[in-house]
Length: 343
Image (cartoon, rainbow, N blue to C red):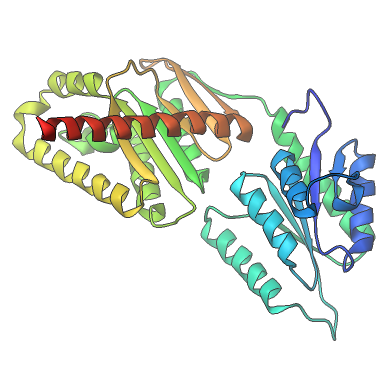
């Protein structure tokens, strides 16, 4: 959200005639709060089709507000889909029904889906607030927008010890619903927590991080809205295996092979949404990126220093770069396999 350059922009989506008064109240409340309301009725004359113009505005907005009552129109569904695709914060306000009022079946189905998704902590989840009167809508809209924008001004998280770094990583994993990207020199996901050969002797914070990471992948790899990428250094991992004498332990190497095969299978079954890749390039880290939180390890050792920030747009940018890197590595591996088979 570019709050240093302009007011926060809030796209208002709803059935226009059905909720005409609610749209006016939302626009007034946002303008009064020094925000920029974005609504179709405020658009100037443009050469684009109305739907194209709305989708462009959704892509550029900072927050997406959806107001529902009886119907969920096709245009609103398209706007919502664009907000989800572009990882916009979604605030949902639902006008409650009185006796004799009813909702269209697709609207009821959508609200049921929202409730179930929130209960399951799935990738698609939204803030869901009921209202009836216009004054109530004004108040909860202002409160919800204030809470959402307050995230911009939170102080960065920081750690001063190794266990705090792992705790921060575990916390990011616990709150990630749609994505998780990890960049490490050596992949704890594959190798396990140190000292590798006897997990019972490892430090609790390392075990917690490792267990949380495995559980996140196992419970989400079948969800088409979730993605996971892990990058690690091949040379650093080889050095780690030699350092701990793991290359001489047949049982450990056999378990490692099973683990690698497991994640290869997950990658294939997920269509490449879940991916583990090694690289020959220099690797710094670790870095971990969730839905809206990013953490980087600046100094290692027991007196570790790490910084974490809560910024969804930063996380979007970092994941785009890591996603591209993973796919380049995949393409390179395919090319190398092809040249080897030709030879």
